[in-house]
Image 1 (cartoon, helix red, strand yellow):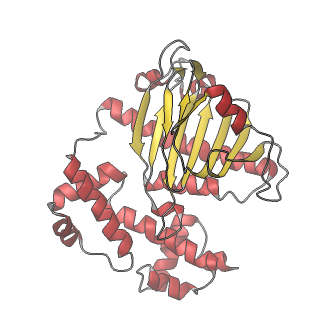
Image 2 (cartoon, rainbow, N blue to C red):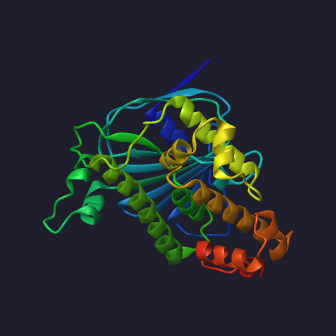
Length: 321
């Protein structure tokens, strides 16, 4: 039997006073609560009056329906990640993002049983977004005007696929190393970094430079198969021609389709995944730098060190200190 909750009941449960002590932080702007609709937690970070972060890490065992009333909705940038059962590491699962402009929102949400999901939601008041995006005349660019609507108008909504750069920024939010005022500065910087990447895609879409869903569904399935092959062979991936043959696409369609689906080239995505795996292995300290370099496909230690430094701004050895 499916549970049906009103928005008031949902929020009442969500905002119950039971607080989980996830760390030693005493930051009043960062509150972590138990997720009452499954296993996990819900975290609210108020960066300032008009900007907030909500981070959910949960597993939904049962389905329920949330009935919402009409309400004022800020701009929302929502990033979804699935915890990879093979790697147990968030960055190896490409996720979707959801963009919602400001305006009036009213809908029923259906929550289905799911594997463990991590969601990072950014909420920004339209006045703040307007002040950042307006031109010298105080107006929004034409390509962004649809993102801010009157409170009595329905919101603009769109789904998209996260690029590796977006995934990295989300991961950095989840692993923020700072506390107090420094944490606020760091997290707000990452918030605007993510907003900038989504907004840039929105501008390109409205200018006709960024095409969405032009690929056939069968081709999109093959592109995702390319990604699976890359993840299984990070140390020694097939050539582009062999990859295309393995998934049944020609070389040109595969390269163009991969960039459309994942926002980067095949080798750009491979490099991102290699560096993320290298970082994970280094901080676990079960391998030395040379062993990690070989594991992610680098025969040359200097080449690996240079690539790692360019990616993260630090040397591989500094991860193990």
